[in-house]
Length: 186
Image 1 (cartoon, helix red, strand yellow):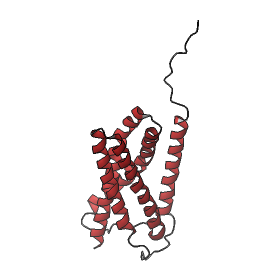
Image 2 (spheres, helix red, strand yellow; image 1 turned 90 degrees about the vertical axis):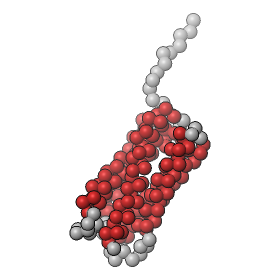
Image 3 (spheres, rainbow, N blue to C red; image 1 turned 30 degrees about the vertical axis):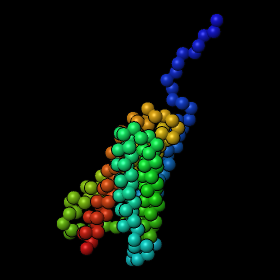
Image 4 (spheres, rainbow, N blue to C red; image 1 turned 60 degrees about the vertical axis):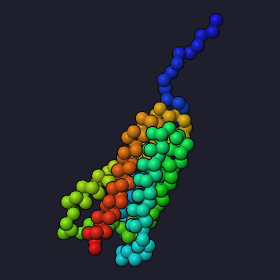
């Protein structure tokens, strides 16, 4: 007579370690960005080199938001492969954004909203929410992708319910804050 082991409900091996690594990388990336923006001296104080980077950043954020909305529409229609392609595209645009964002801040440093500009009281809370939710969205995006790519679809769905609106908000507010800053600077 053989006995079967009782079923376990533990996480598959490696999931906890992978999530811990994602959180560590996200924390390190966030710390690096804060150092780069607020501590590191800008290489080009006059902001003449690669002056197109802020507009490129806004474009990449807009493209990411578009791909996210397309991916959401596709998954609601049950088109899993197309959904996956759209989400990979959104991830690609967001990754390119991050590279461009790092280059911009390494060259130009922090760009401040004019003190006496009309929409400053709207811009600053929007920017703060954008920054704080971007910090939260980074590990959520990576965990959501991890669950999807490792076939943990129930976990993927649970996390994606939070990831999608945060990622979309960060992408859209990135475009809005760029537009507001440009309008205020004249």
